[in-house]
Amino acid sequence: MPLRCLSELARRRPDRAVDAMRVGLRCLMTTCTSTNATDSQRLLYATSCANVPEVAPSETPLSDMLVDSFGRFHNYLRISLTERCNLRCQYCMPAEGVQLTPNSQLLSHDEIIRVADLFVTSGVDKIRLTGGEPTIRKDIEDICLHLSGLKGLKTLAMTTNGLVLSKKLPRLKECGLNALNISLDTLVPAKFEFMTRRKGHSRVMESIDAAIELGFQSVKVNCVVMRGMNDDEICDFVEMTRDKPVNVRFIEFMPFDGNVWNVKKLVPYAEIMDKVCQRFKGVERLQDHPSETAKNFKIDGHAGTISFITSMTEHFCAGCNRLRLLADGNLKVCLFGPSEVSLREPIRAGVDDAGLREIISAAVCVEIHLVDIFCMKDRVI
Image (cartoon, rainbow, N blue to C red; front, side):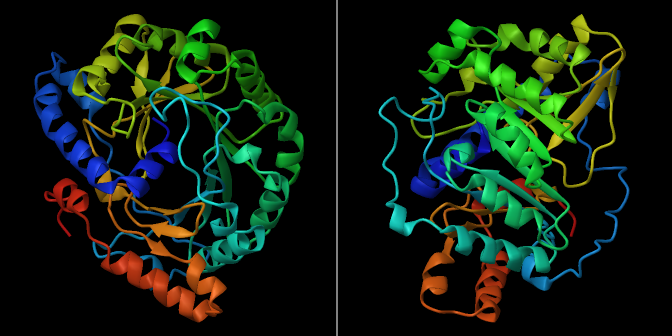
């Protein structure tokens, strides 16, 4: 499921999010170790945390404000612009939607820019705009324009369902947006309508093509794989990369309030990879960045690439470099952690930038969660 949706679960029902994640991880230990993969395949499937180069020095002075208790430097900020969405994906939210935070309690345009500037001047060089669905926010273009002008920011990305994206793309690109993740879980229009409870498959495909034509430096297609729903389309999605220069990312189905998650719906990474290797030749592992959440591959003769987000079967907490600013101004250091710190309240109380930095630093440094400890128990600090 899209992480923008999962963050709302962790925010609203942290107890269920953490419990489901821990149970899921433990249930899948057997799944991960019992795969029929050969030794060479296991090497191909292996995580990328080992044998990778050190992170290149940042052009922006690094700040202790963004270093957590595990020594991880967080240079990637995800900003949720809204809780609203124009789809009702079955694995994401109930048909009737969710209770929304009043607009008066959401961050304003100026508040978003102010907080983002604090993070960028402290070392954040990548910002991703999420939701809800970020494109339904009326001031999305102006937000992108101001964010892209922040000195030190290298990447301004957006995760979107693509439903109304194509018409907005030219202006968004002019305003500095340079990377896109477009969520698409099926290539079958009728199945799309069933899964999202809305029409619009053709419009999402138009958005993908428009992004390619406009020359965005990164166009990724996020596909949540669910057994019995779309696992029969895995190779069809891979085939998309033959002619389109896109990165198709297969995401393991994750726990979320309302999606009736259970381990039977999960299609593990190793199983997806087996299907791909049986159908396509010349699948080669690419070297990943140490903080990369995806395992990336190229295929001979394909213009694009494929990736795997193994949130359930092979965690990547040790390399996590992400912070999340929710639409209501709450900061989350860990997606599955139960705690969050309000930045909206001190901003509206008149706290200056130095005071906000202290609040952020305390949240990042002190925040330790059961999931962090569970996932990082084997890491050598």
